Amino acid sequence: MATASMRTVRLSSRDVPALGQGTWYLGEDPARRREEIAALRLGLDLGMAIVDTAEMYGGGAAEELVGEAIAGRRAEVFLVGKVLPDHADRRGTVAACEASLRRLGTDILDLYLLHWRGRHPLEETLAGFTELMTAGKIRTWGVSNLDLGDMAELVSLPGGSAVAVDQVLYNLTRRGIEWDLLPWCRRNRAGVMAYSPVEQGRLLRAAPLRAVAESLGATPAQVALAWVLEQGVAAIPRSGREEHVRENRAAADLRLPPEALDALDAAFPPPAGPVPLEVL
Image (tube, rainbow, N blue to C red; front, side):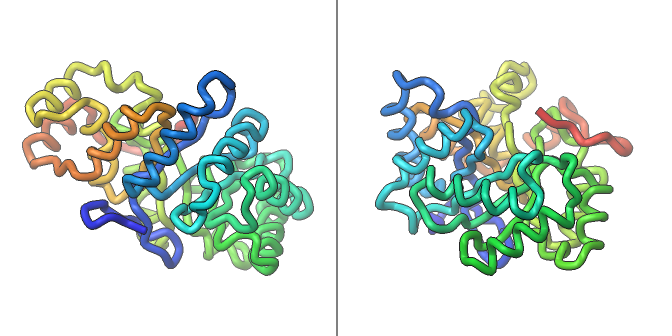
């Protein structure tokens, strides 16, 4: 699944390319559908095998778009879906997954996440995940936007230690997880996936990042993505345009020298203490 030069991350028992593709806001503009499908397919051509989506995105429109993009290529994809918190009791989790599978045109998800914590007890969501795994509809499960306390509670539950991933907001301007959550995930062999790794584009205007990028002959987006990958974290930038997919893919081949990492630490310092988990 991974190309020779692509960094990989361990998700559950599988090594997958660390740089993938997000789909938040894709599928919502019919005029851009062909362009967005072409972009997703190009990403697969370039080895960006993680495709992350959710029932929330466009009320299922992103899943339908992904389904069309990966038709005939399912074996190339590490497909990630998410259940909304309001659906995340046992029965609701199963029903939501089955609906997502229909929209995606597949019979199995590689990874299924609780999108964020809501009113349903974690035990109920775990029961739904277990039922889906037993039925062969998901290969593994994880969570999104859960902080350290949530994760500690999760792994204390029967079966909770099997959590494969915590997908969280993480980029140069959102480094709070480095204080406690990221080390905890490493100790407990839970993968970390970063959504909004370029802060929905806002980070790219930062002068220090632009200076580092210029010194390396790279773009700000490439440096920001390469920095996330340097932390051993998977990144799932969204792009609906082929030129942006090519730009993102080049980040996987960029190695940041010590002086660049030092400059980024100076401009975007790591946390000096606990920071509440940030979300978008």
